[in-house]
Each structure stands twice: as structure tokens, then as C-alpha cells.
Image (tube, rainbow, N blue to C red; front, side, top):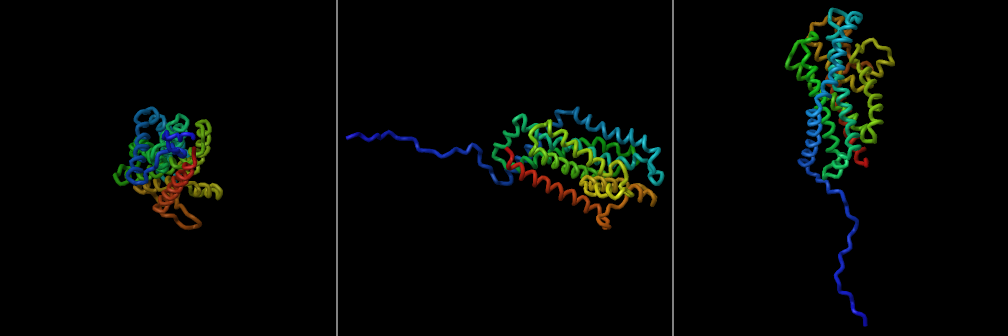
Length: 294
């Protein structure tokens, strides 16, 4: 008769889930979003040279190109071309900073920091929102230096105007950062991210009406400017800036033409709501795509 083996055996275990359970409470997710946002702000603090280089191009546009073209561009009156150019350049000053902040997600993936965030007990939507908010805040803060030059182009300083412009800048920066983040969810290398971002950034800048009036354009160009979401940031900023000046009827028609959809005059508030809706859609899509990213 064989003796039975009474040695205790370890209980059999199923497959071990290496990923921690994601906490669903809102406070925890908001804290995670703030941590990612704060990391973007610390990057700005540690890279002051980037702020200087990002502001160099807008300053050249206003004071070099604006002065050079001022003698040949007809503004419809006595208004300086730099005055017209300033709101558009200010709006696009967030373009490169915000877009590059978005594609910095690719850097995080290459250097392994993204994997550390993805295994943390937070939702991936929190990571996306943190990147977008951080990039938008950084781009807006950098543009405040350019905003301080408001009076040098003939636009009077006004607390209300400055608040309106800062709000538009943040909304535009959030839009562009969200677009960059959406691209980064599928791009694997920074070598691929840079040319793709440039392919989007340059057309958006030139088709936004930032450097030229959108009135009287050929039909095909008018359609492209209205399909460009950045147009709905540039035009409200130009409206807010130039409404403080005593423009003649000819200057008003030339410099601040009415933006229309199929003959309907689009109010400034609707233009900004359009940007907000597109931005929310981009962030939502980026969060969904990011859930399937390895």
C-alpha cells in the first residue's frame, strides 16, 4: 500500500495581470492630468533658448516683412500694414510651439517615459489631456512676450483686448497641440514626425489669412481658408484688435471682411465655438486612438 503524499502544494494561479487597476475617481484622474501638464511647464523652464528661437520668426514677420511690404500693400486707407499683420502673426505664434509640444509624445515614446506613464494606474485620456493642456499653456505663455509689443504697431493697450487675445491664443494653442498629439499617437519615430508636422503647419499658417486679407480671394482659395480651423482663430483676433481703431469704411471692408458660410455672416462667437468643438473632437479622437497604442 503506497503512502499518500501529504505535502502541501502551492495553489495554482492564473495569468498575472501586470498592469495596475485604473482608478476611476475623477479626483485621481484630474491629479494625473495636472502631473502631465506640470511636466510640460517644467520643460519650458529648463529650455529658455527654445522660447527665444520660437519668438524670432514672428518678430521678423511683423517688423521686417511688415515694414517691407507696407509700402506696396494697399490697406484701403492710412492704416499701417504692420497693424493689420500683427493679430495674424500673434495668432500663428503659437503654431510651431503647440504643434511641437504635441509631437513631443513621440520623444516620450522613444526614450521610454511614455511606457512608464502607460503602466501607471491612470486612464490614457488623462495623459492626452495633460499633454494638450500643458502644450497649450506653454505656447500661450511664450506668446505673451509678443503680446507685449501691441502698442508698437499702433494698437492701443487695453485690459479687455489683452484678455480677449489671451483667450484666443489659448484656444488656438489647444487646437494645434491636440492635432499634434493625435498625429503622435500613431507616429513611432521623431524622424517621421517632423516632416509630417511641417506638412500640416505651413499650409495652416498660409491658408489662415494671417498674412493677407481674406476678402476678394479666388473661389478655390476662399474655400480652403474656410476649411482651415486656424482661420477661426485668426479672424476673431483681428476683429478684436482692429475694432479699437477708427477705421474708414474702405479699410473695414479691406482689412476685416465678414467671414461667411454659404452667404451667412458667421458671428465671432460662432467662429470661436467652432474652434472649441473641433478641438474637443481632436482630443477625444486622440484619446480613443491612444487606448490601442502599444
